[in-house]
Image (cartoon, rainbow, N blue to C red; front, side):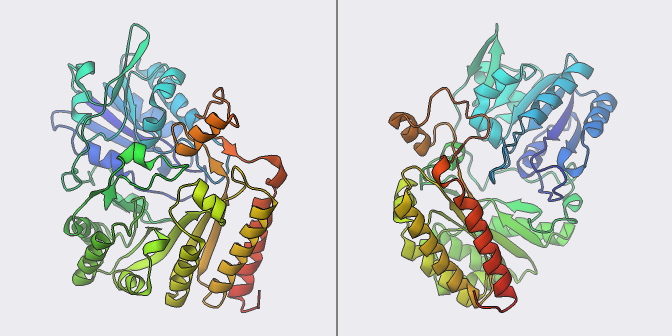
Length: 440
């Protein structure tokens, strides 16, 4: 049996930022030595399609396993990566009509049945974690009904098996660094850490727009700090990786796990840096100090709302004071900080717009002296099927059930649709003035 593992395009064409295909690399290590294995990360090439054609023609795999990480790029871009999946699947079917085509990955897990309907060439899909199911789905004599989380076709009907239990994070397979060489990701990135690190899976916060609980589970499964830092140290020493990004929904929750991880970093005294998304209400000066000593180089905050109404609507379990306190901590510690906010939310009116401006200016003033605010990223809320906010909008009649959420769909009514652009301009000026030591 011959198998080809392919990471589908998951970034803007020409963006230049490359991210190691962590999930596919772990699954690759589970492929038996009895298989002849080949691989391709399409994100490594400005024009990846000749590379895919060459792989399929030269290796002629019996199985092609595609990983679809993102369904669209977010950041307000009305771009869908469905085109990449459709084209790739059609290309394989055209060249090798009898090859088995399977698809998995986070984006596929969100839209599995819908993608099977949209891309008729897909033979099998895998929803959810793949570590237990992947070795079963690539067997020569597969029994579709026995594979947890599997989607399959029978007589024109798509069937989906229930998912299996989540894997322990200390049992996840290692990266296959031979098939997917980390060295291919060490050059060219200007903003994004090239390699992700899993400290946990799952999230218990249930934010209104978020699908993390449906992807990883509604409770956190923690990986031991020793195993986390072992992997980082190995990647650093053997492959020269110096910057990592934690893929956790929130890196500093639970606090005791985060503190243990920081102590493990400090004890090893590694010459590496790392980034991650942090929760504001558990961020204080002591924690910031330990994190910097452990190698923290940048914090991403995702409070997502600048108003009391927005925080409540999105189920953030945060207050505006929590956000301001966290900003003061990172400014006083001079930690590079990125903030994410969603604008023009359901129920926003003139009063909320005024409140949002006031809150934004308070944050800009806090960061101005330290000039540590790397970016304020504004967006409109992307509606995903099954998310709490999506269900609420359907119940209220504001969102029709006829809307196909497979494609990028943002809540952004016309009255305040200009707000994002005005706030972006305001923050741009404030950032430039701060760096040039000009009062905002």
